[in-house]
Image 1 (cartoon, helix red, strand yellow):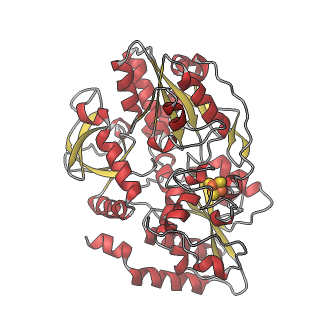
Image 2 (cartoon, each protein chain N blue to C red; image 1 turned 180 degrees about the vertical axis):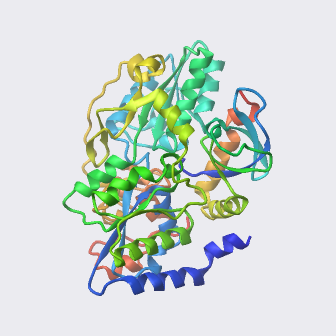
Image 3 (cartoon, rainbow over the protein chains, first blue to last red; image 1 turned 60 degrees about the vertical axis):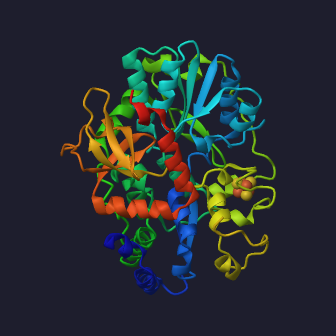
Length: 383
Length: 96
Ligand code: SF4
């Protein structure tokens, strides 16, 4: 597997690191945000920051769909699940996400019929097998996942299934990026663009970030060398005074995305006026809802949900972590009260969350040299 | 859940269910290839695809698939969980 070796090769990583360092202007500091949780995972797992000069900081973004789900929506989903007629279905990642009164796991222990599924199609199958029950699929995810939900709804419509619906929490990736650019606390020099989201939306939608907001963006793959290469491309752009959208992951991401997937989503869903994001607050046109034509499959219309807004627990600093304003280990409960087994905040739930990634693979060398003040106990590495 | 798993197409979808058979890490399962319907080049047995929550998102080449698989293995628990869930998927097993 020569290809793999090429991507793994420590020498190549060091060589790219050296080239990146050579591009850094003396005295200038750089901050790049990796939007996608998959990238955060790779960065921690492979200790990529060790290959970068001190002047470059990687800021973790909001691209983990589990992490950005606000408490209120979890509560709404649990309220639906508590209906004795209902079978709630959800991805495994969703099970531990805390609401204001426990998680899906807790509700299940208390008797709610909540089942883990790998695919929305599995939920559809459960609906067919249980015609006397109402089967709801808890839909979460960015553009990568949305087409799958939309296809499943089309399928249910074609079959005339009357006991299947979707609690739609699908979000779109660009509005939170804009919100973060608008935030006064954070100065970013560019973005490492999400790989799999871009498989669907392509690279064009990011153009305004470069053209109007003056930040270069490089869509990147998930291998360690992909990420280093994309940082190199960002540094070259800055050094040459360019500001463009580039595609480092061309071997998977077509520039125009997946047209069929976009059509399917557009057929079934439309933008909401506004949606609440954990830590980021309400962001206009940042999430999707089912179109009127598919109201029969919309759990939000079929069930009475509390729809209450719930503030995050006091101890939880996920909001700051999701905006890149705080490193995971700087949160007061990180690794002590908040662990992947007993998450207080969402960033600790999914393996793509910054806190979970840091907990699992955390490295402290860099943090220390950066004048960290409140270091927690050393983290268990490679659990 | 955001991981994509590469799989090799071993049997095309033969009806309007869009369900094709793929082999992932030696396990055969059905996945929905309807999102690739517009693909200029038609799918063929032996093609590699990127699978996410039971749907094929993109066609990839074999080298990319090998690299992705290798990387997923290196992720340990996160990958094991994804694969376990994939294998447990009822759709995958029996079709629609
Ligand atoms: S340690 Fe827990 S509470 Fe703190 S930011 Fe991370 S996930 Fe949130």
